[in-house]
Length: 257
Image 1 (cartoon, one colour):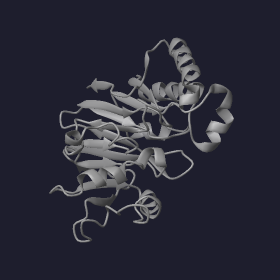
Image 2: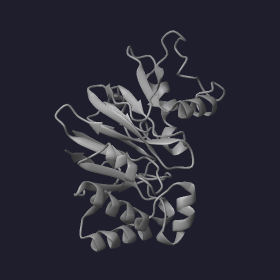
Image 3: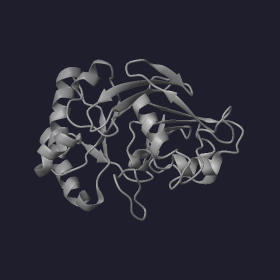
């Protein structure tokens, strides 16, 4: 399983992109930067998109992806919670600022085909076993366990606050891709809005180890640009505390499981 990080940040600047990653070139998790990061030929290889939640930094490129690819022969399935699809349809794919690619080129065969995904119900999508699990955020949100045909697995939290312990009853990933969206000093605020600091991540990892007896490889993403250097130092601090390595994701990073 090859995991390519397209966007490792919560906002955008030159060379730094919003949340997206792609598995084996065909399965995209979130759509914050699937067109700003992929060549046209690479975009044409995408077969399905899994959204964790509705927020702009995780869904924006659905519009440009549709514009680039809508005339190709095979449609692309977009999986998400029903609440997520409702908001994305009403606010992004509404046909007011640009074409609604969930209804175009025809209502009978749109390019973006919306598919409701339900937590705790495993699906096979493009040959991968996909299990959506609820996470704590300011809007309805899910993380995804993705398991390849040869048994390799990752869990991608998307945006999440504390409280992931219940996920580990259903997931035993080799790789945990998890957000760190703020500074330790903002911990109370981050809890309220459904995000993690390095210290809150440390607490989640301690709970993971108690529940599972091991720690997976850990990759931190979704760093805000304005605090990135400070957050990196705080992540390195908890790495030392826990005596583990925590990788920090970057645009173009490739991990092979």
